[in-house]
Image 1 (cartoon, rainbow, N blue to C red):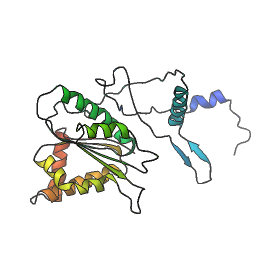
Image 2: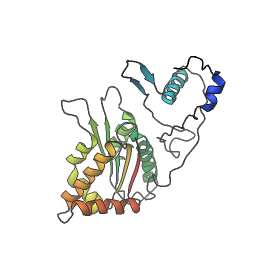
Image 3: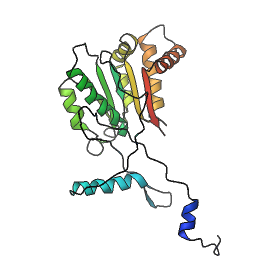
Image 4: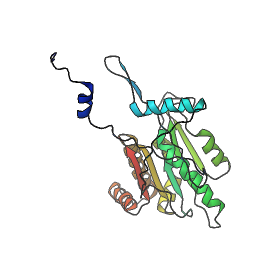
Length: 249
């Protein structure tokens, strides 16, 4: 548009905004994975309307570093910790815990599950049930931490492991559909056993659908519960730290 405008690259870069930090959930437990920090990410790649393939800046860079590590090379990655005050495993394991995290949203629940098993091995108190609702498109392509959760489940350290493979059948199946399958049990855990509920992942669609499903479950489980009172109940759970979400758009 302006052929005469030919700024130097260094001048142009000076006016560009700084690259925003990328935040990833830690998927390990320091008590179990001593001296290590694990996390998962999906490599961003998409095609524009004009047919150009775009790659995510941070995830593409991390993917290339991962390839170097597989080749035996040592790499250094700058990491800046941002502790979460709310999104943490409860101090006690006596209450049930319901974890809902499709995609990379399952990452913190791997850490939760390992930490819970660590506490369980050192505690004599009664242990509440642990549930994990996980979802991905295809078990052969993006099934995260399958071996970890399967082993925890087989050892009864993770009591219920429900998986939704959204693209393996004609009709799409998501985590809220799996919750529907167990609505009676989930309702009792929340209303009678004071279960904790954690949700992690997509805030644009998944978190809203899961929230609506929780409202439906409460109404189905308690005849006196109305949609309005179900909303209020979940709000009280949030205020009391029993319903915690880590979501993004």
